Structure formats: structure tokens, C-alpha cells
Image (cartoon, rainbow, N blue to C red; front, side, top):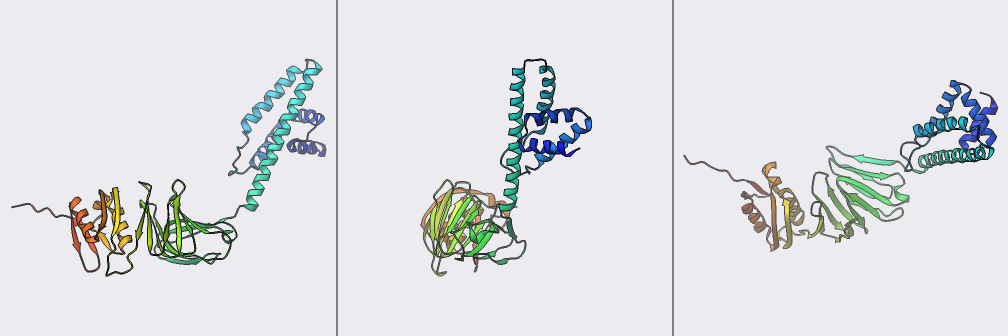
Length: 336
């Protein structure tokens, strides 16, 4: 290929080809199968510059090729038409190629912009052990086992957003711009200068936020949620889409009286709520009873009374040991 045709192709793909350029390009493409193949390869190369993650649609190379071949066939028939019609076709063709060139230029520019300005994500995860991390804004994170956090590398200089799966404790740092926000299971926990713990395992219907110091805003996109202060726990049920505010037990010798509303809630979620509310250990003897459902309201009841009612309602046996409660199936003894 000579320099002249290289310049013509450059102007064509850049959207600035003249009528004369278009005539030369048609003659060059139709002169040999090799030229046609080279033109197709150049077209595919410019399409590929769009990348795979652009929001705008990619050009359809098959449709573009069919349109171009149809145009060549049509131009051969129209050669015998009047000069006025020929001018209209040339104008339309020039506009089409200019539009295609501009589109390819936009795709290429967006690809470069995304490559330069998109900040990479940082992923920290645990399997069997806890892990301590200090983030760029000096926030201290203690990640529990089987948990993961994700944040961008420009974390301290922009919106401070952390995505969480599992459980993590946060001591919020004050360096950088904006408030810390934790995204967990469709909920958002926005810090107002605190020490707090978030538990949001994917296989659990409940998301809990325990505030040790300060205050957080706990909400979803559809629900304004609640503000949780020190020594309070907020619980969100992903099934019912409801928030519950609980007061933590600050004195183990004293049991706080609270209000609970359980609507068709699985027993494992009820137990998790009570454990968070009273800072006690309640265990289930096997996984089969964890899926049992219960609907009940408790208003200012002692935790022993609550567990006794739950056990009677679900035909379970309640045992109170020195350090924990145990719920199990009732053994059915057959008479001899």
C-alpha cells in the first residue's frame, strides 16, 4: 500500500474523508480481494478499540459490512442516473462515513479515559483467621473469618466507601474527605465518628450493626432507617425489610427489658437477634430446628420468659447452663 492510500484510510476512519478520497477508496477496495480483506481488518481493529466495558453500544461490524457492500452494489446501478442523484448519494455516503469515524473516535477516547482515570479496587479477605488492617484514612478494621472488604485505591481522597461481606469491626479514622460509608447486603451504614461492628453474611437474613462509641446512620435506598448510638444495636431483616433498634446489655447481672416483633422469622434469626440484644449465648442443638418459623410479639419480657415461650411454641426443649442457653428437640420415648 502506498503512502497516498494510507493517508486516505487515515482520513476515512477519522471522519474527514473528501468526495475524492471516497472515490479513491472504492476503487482501491474493488481492485483486489487482498485490499478488501485489509480494509475489513482495519475496520475490525477500530471496533476493538472500544473495549469490553464501555457503557455505549459497540458498532455491529456485520451490519456495517453489509451496508457497505450494499452501497457498492447500489452505486454500480446508479452510475447511469442523473448527476443530481449521484450528488445526493455521495453526500449521504460521506455523512455515513463521517458519523462512523466520529463514533470510533469517541469509543477510543472513552477507552483511554477509563483506563487512565478508573481507580483499581483493593480486596482484603479472610478464611480461617481474623485480620487487622489500617486503611488510607487511618480507619482500623478488624475483619472476622470468612469475611471480605472492598474499597478503591483513592479511598482517602474521595468518597470513603467500603463494601463488606461477613463481619468487621471499624474504628473510624478522620483523615481524608467525606464520611465513611459501609455497604453491606443492600444496606448502608454511614459513620458519624464511631467505633462499630457490622455483621452481614450473605447466607444470613439479618444484618446487625453494634455501636460501641459515637453514632451511625443505618439505612437502605428505600428506607431512611435509623440512627444508632453507643450501646445500641440496629438489626435489619432482609426478608421483611424492617429495622429493629435494640439496647445492648451493659451489665451482665441485669437483663434489659425490650420490645420484639417476630413475623414469620426463622429461629436462627430470632436467636441471633436475642444474642445481640442481651449479649448472651444461645445455642441450637442441630441445624434442622434453625429453619423453624415463629411469629410472636414480646413487650418488656424477661429473656428467660421469651426463650421459654419460643420453646413451647416450637415444641423444643430449653436448657439453661452456666454460660449459655440450649434449644433442642424433645426426645419422644415410645412406651414398651
